[in-house]
Length: 257
Length: 175
Image (cartoon, rainbow over all chains, first blue to last red; front, top):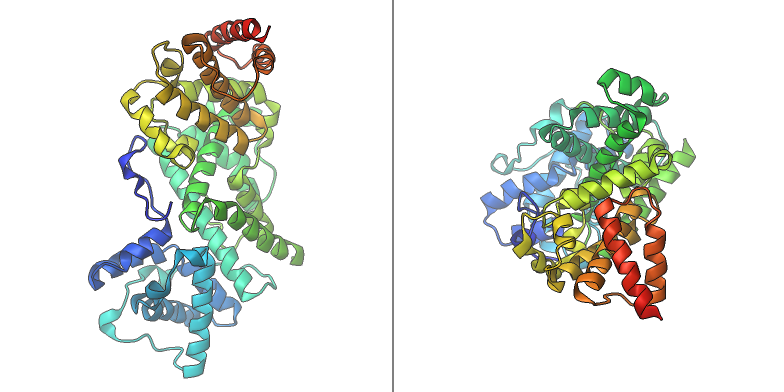
């Protein structure tokens, strides 16, 4: 599966994502400018977990953002991350966490936590400065905070993709039902909006039909979720292991709350 | 995005969404299982080939290189292909394998039922139109399976007709 190009055979849009490992391998063969651009896209997925790890280690908001920027620039753009990245090492999430732990140790040792390196090598992570990342009040380890934020980022990206797909396919009402019955109750608390109420509000003739609409979006959610998660593991077997491992980490957080 | 970010959500809430993404079932699926299975099977059968990975998620992972057998049929619906007496085994086999993998991933619920529906439609087509048994199951087992599936409210009528014919083929060969 690694490096295999699926774009020869595909669905309606003819494109399939390669794994993140495949992207890293491609970056290793690119020139510096192109590599930076591609790497920026890839690391966009991971800057929040890096930041949350640093916050959990005790750094304030501004310092954590500085260190996040520093990590991504110094380690990733310096190709240290690229040079040592190897699919045989397993999941990209755990590999990135290890690289981050190494970086933090080095920073503390060199006592240069606030330096970011040369201006010519800056990566424009404009999102960092203005964005407020909520840190849940929990007592987990920095490593758990990294994994929580990573799980949340994957879910955010999945939900955004599913919403966009639903709206472009004319399934706006489907999406609204899914939010009302599934997403909002989980994220905001409270009971799901009753089906009869939703049917009346949207002119749907029957709870069975409304249920089917909700499940239609659920399937899209699951397909997108698994596809995104598969991008960060070395092979198909790792996928289920990664799911279970993150669930264990989340269960630790749940037990501690 | 109209939903709140999940960043900062409690671990328990993240776990619930993670479990859902990994294959969890909604209460609606249990309550309206037959209706949802019928709609899902209809939707899958109406889908053009090759099957939309956005819906099935894992077509290429499951079918792999064998999916090239489906390329000449691009644009035709799965229903049309499965019910066509002239469809070759190069197309039937990957469809059967795809459905089998889906049924294994979703062990219960409408996804499982729809996958079983497609799987047995592929088997039935091979039996009725080609006289071939493309499974290790014996004829007795297949006859009983078709019989059981014929009682399912979610089975489309044209597929039910094929299953009746396949049941007869199996009965004849089981003796």
